[in-house]
Image (tube, one colour):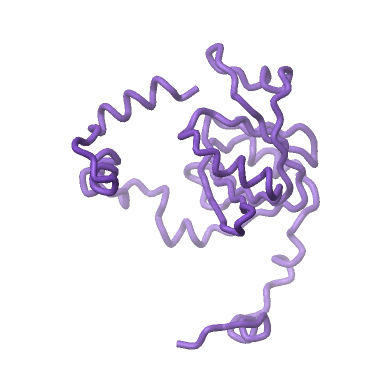
Length: 202
């Protein structure tokens, strides 16, 4: 197996992209991008730390939880998580961010690249209140690129096709996996974990 080390080697193995693929990258969010974001309850967020390591994390809430402030700006609340702050720490060192918006049942996705900055302005946090609870911070994303991504990955994976879903029991619970990985004495049950999650969603 040969390791590829140059763009020329790589390009020699692949066909040229179609003209439409080259032209589809937008510098701002057009009406179709805004609609897509407004219907999306889930986004994958990629960031890069000072150590040059990449990180990808899911962010989810009710559809439209990522607000389009204007054609060049997105607002994304930081809901309670594990408090590792991997993404936020990365963004302090390097504001480059990549977002992949998904809509369950829709095979196409929307990719948005730009720069993200962390804010804790009271008026900004108030815009994302849920059941009397506020996010600790909000990301303000300055959009640099936006483009629709084709459906092939989701068509191949059957990600939204319930007939291809696996039984949850085929995988150990997260508590069981963490018990084994961390050499813990006991494991939190799936039911216990879900109840804990429900109490701390916001």
